[in-house]
Image 1 (cartoon, rainbow, N blue to C red):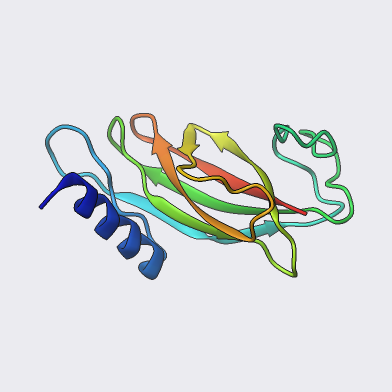
Image 2 (image 1 turned 120 degrees about the vertical axis):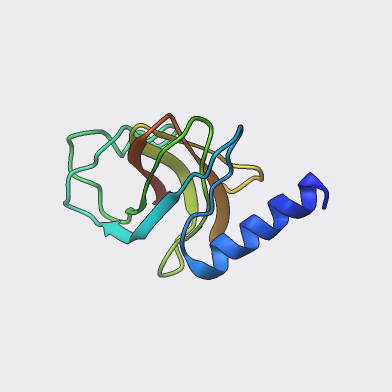
Length: 136
């Protein structure tokens, strides 16, 4: 099976099941867990500075009209991650993403001003963190 087909199968499985499927480099089994969706709303404290959105700043209240949709990711192994779908609620659209903890992400397609997208989380060793979508 080609790498593209394997990646497509992993993405579909992760999206349908709502849990992470490891994308590991090297040998050995690796488990990546994606937690349930959490939502931070206006008035709650922002956990990060949102790149490109000056209204959302770490330690400050989230402004009216914004929602931060988070998914906690945890697991072990270098270079592993999971495909995660983010969808904004209530007619809102994606503006940017941010992270907390030892987790990163990559967005393989343009998402700004779209209602939904899929990103790939990236963990650094045995780590955990949260990937957030900023919706407005």
